[in-house]
Image (cartoon, rainbow, N blue to C red; front, side):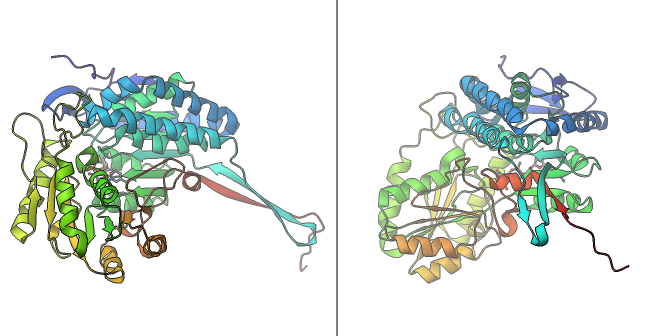
Length: 486
Ligand code: NAD
């Protein structure tokens, strides 16, 4: 069977596809069937060098262009992505197994939003003028960092490629992006479209490979910044390697986020938030609210309504637009999640529904809910990264806030209540970078996104991302004579 996914070549460097079959082969597997649909090769040291040299050569002239000119190219790319949304979504579904129903609205379109937003901001990036005493003054110049490396996870390959590329390019940097080895295809299309939109060669390069290719990029002396989306253990390694070279970093890492539902909440909204925050993308979302704290009085009503609504999950062929629940990304990830489910049962949590592999081909796992989960259970402490919701009981606000924060992670947190004062009190107390009131997992490009504690450093999206892709040069200007002691 032929699939419409075979990339022209493994890498995209200096404005063109590049192949080097000397690199280790990486098979791309369609998670819905387990079929090999494409093959790419990991970047060899020569390919990595080519990517860095071309990025370095192109970056200076790009930074010297006006922000408006840079932005125009990014916005053109955004329009092209939207025009090709259907084909890009099909590719994303092949890459990840996520239902087309999702990829049509959440992946390429979210990437286009980032290109449009940062394209619009590019012309307004400025320094400031600072009046000082005696007529003296200072000004600042906002400068690009240079060559940025982006390293992606496998759950949102197109979005991550754009969330890192768009602000980097808007600020006048070059970007070298290494997709996850599990989902290498979509970023190549992002590179292709950016160059078709007029991006000069060398400014957005894509190289494939496993962790060691990422590590080679991070430690390269000509790289100025590293932005990683990945797990906490990888984040620790990448952050340490970047620190050795005193490089800038953004770390978008894992989480075990709390979602707190008070007894005055609109029950259907709360159930909807919990479904979105646990089962979208088969639960493979970093900010998921996987510790669902439900106030004791509404616990059984919540579980009953949840079980009822989970009956609406349509599991099947992700290319069928009526399907809203797809497979896990890989056999390996499915195995990890199955082991957590077994652990939950062993620890005495009550399995409300799901818990089993769906028979047949592909890496499908049923949406799974555990109730009566306690804070010290492994399933309540570790990131599972699959469709497994843990429901925990609580009695009062102070208690639930303390328990919500009792984790090394701090990516996101949500609260459902009709009491607005309580909602804002909870948000003020949450140790999390991204919070939601009566909603869950919204990620508009205008809003900063990122974590605290072990979940990360820096922010993506919004004006906040500009701070992480540019630096400020200060200039003191003396208007009078220089007074020296001798
Ligand atoms: P991972 O940490 O295994 O891999 C992430 C990327 O890092 C991959 O491209 C991998 O090849 C690369 N890598 C691995 N070792 C490296 C090294 N030593 N040096 C440089 N690069 C290296 O993560 P994953 O399994 O691909 O993704 C799942 C994880 O990502 C989850 O923990 C999830 O929470 C997290 N995630 C976070 C966000 C966020 O924005 N905070 C978004 C999506 C996923």
